[in-house]
Length: 188
Length: 384
Image 1 (cartoon, rainbow over the protein chains, first blue to last red):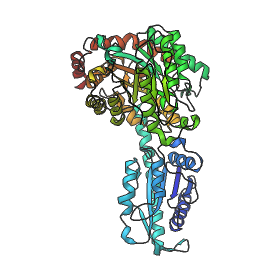
Image 2 (cartoon, rainbow over the protein chains, first blue to last red; image 1 turned 180 degrees about the vertical axis):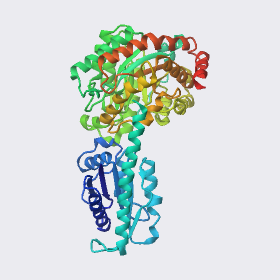
Image 3 (cartoon, rainbow over the protein chains, first blue to last red; image 1 turned 90 degrees about the vertical axis):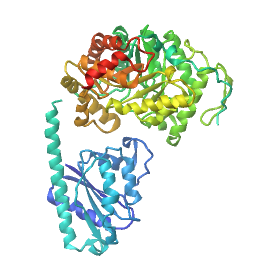
Image 4 (cartoon, rainbow over the protein chains, first blue to last red; image 1 turned 135 degrees about the vertical axis):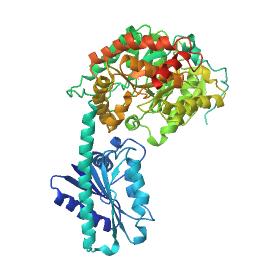
């Protein structure tokens, strides 16, 4: 199974801190998984210009290809102006409409205020559904107070992330076996 | 922008010009994108030279089998062999004698309309008046970089060049200026084609927006479809005719062709099995994404626009499509995704003996009306 973890912002460290923890959790739960962390602050992405994803070059080409090849994706996003950052939206714009068909996607949000709790559901999930993802229903919402100097200091957040990773892996395997059985039944 | 000049002569009735008004029934054709993909069964791939000669062999076989039209497209990327599609069409023109020959599509956005017209006018002479040109915008953009164009001009490049191409076709001497090419001053673009005018179509994807542009220009339309239900493409056809009408063209003078996957086998299950790996693996290589089995399995439905199944099922589907669209020509893509030569030849033979005669029989002598009564009956049979 290929799993990509995205840290969706090119500013700050909170999302990066949480997504690094998520990546380690994935590897701890199942060392056979090929897990990759993509931090959008560390890659040089161009804005989407409408071309097919296979025709981007450099980091943009590598990131789009990694996402298209993934079986599961865990997206970490900060909340900017009551929505996702432009860096993350650009990732979706680079991909074709049905890009997330047969992929399981989980969401993690970091925010300065609890008032943003519904933003992942209202701003991010509709995009993922439109792109045909199987979205893991629970998501983890991390506040600034849960972090201190690039560490998660709230045990409950760690427990919630553990459960999110577990749900993501179980659902990915489950959907894969359902699909396998269904594809075999078509007989072609 | 461009000088429109005084060229408002009565537009040619393309329906008559292309012989669609003669009551011979729906025209049947085959097209290749010019792809050069491995056979998914064993991963083997013929050489580029062999692939190019295959196109010529298919054209000859299609002519013998009673097809009306054959065409090859232009694509400038990995897994394609028909970059110089006009050269291939010249060879096909020489190798055949009655079948009409076209491009699906010529990527006009990245070519000089003068050179394109010269090429196709020449093919028209080699073939003694059998050439047609289908102009498209390219679904992939590698060629913009290769040929030195800016992707930001994607829309305008095509529109300007398409307008100029049509001017060159209508006018023996052209005075024109635009953004993307040096001005023309009483330029005579030669040779003048054998047919006057050269049939020029606009390639349209499934969406109505591009069909509207074809309608507004008053040019025939080739509508491509990858999959989906037949009725979902009706709005595109309606938008085309409505746009033409609004601009003062009579839709009854404007032919429509439809284009999509075609695969015949003894049963629909065998057809699914025979075609799926080619489409799935081929699309992965050319588009980056395969075709989900669930979607593909729906192609057996009588109302699916994918013409896949037994000869009888394919006949019924095409008649249903003819009832819905009232189109004049259907062209099938048979050779996509590394389909071996002998299998494609077998397809051509079966289509020629079992599908084309039936389609023509049920659509003949009703071409002047968009709704054929013969096909209505057959369509009722399949609609259940």
